[in-house]
Amino acid sequence: MLYLKVTDIKKSYTSKMLLDGVACTISKGQKVALVAKNGAGKSTFLKLLLGEEHPSVGTIEWRDELDIAYLAQDDRLDDRQTVRDVLYDFDVNIEWEQLVEMDIAVNKLQISPYLDQVV
Image 1: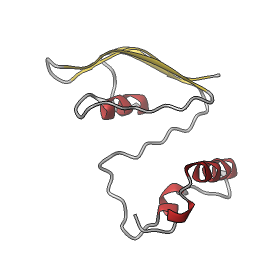
Image 2 (image 1 turned 135 degrees about the horizontal axis):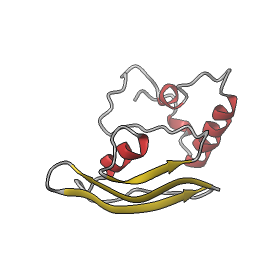
Image 3 (image 1 turned 45 degrees about the vertical axis):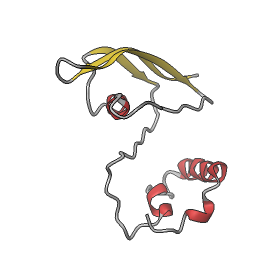
Image 4 (image 1 turned 90 degrees about the horizontal axis):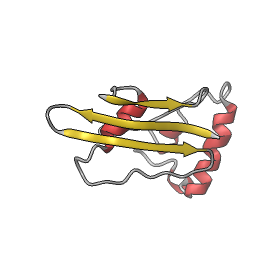
């Protein structure tokens, strides 16, 4: 099952091309890491995927009914919140499936001991 399809993405802010011909797909069950040197366009690529910015050229297609989330590298978190508060910031009474998925992710990442630490 295909979740994301990126085709020939190009993005420039000035005469410098930041992303040039990026293409990828993400399917159900895949694990993906975005790794590159500073200034290579990782944050820009994520902003494109989220629709916060638009590519100069190319297409981004998400499967319908997906919830996409992103914690920006420069987000300012409330220093009174715990890790649990940040990760579980949704209405568990309505979104119980998300609660189950988050519990599974927390267990896989083995971060349970850190959930009550202040961020």
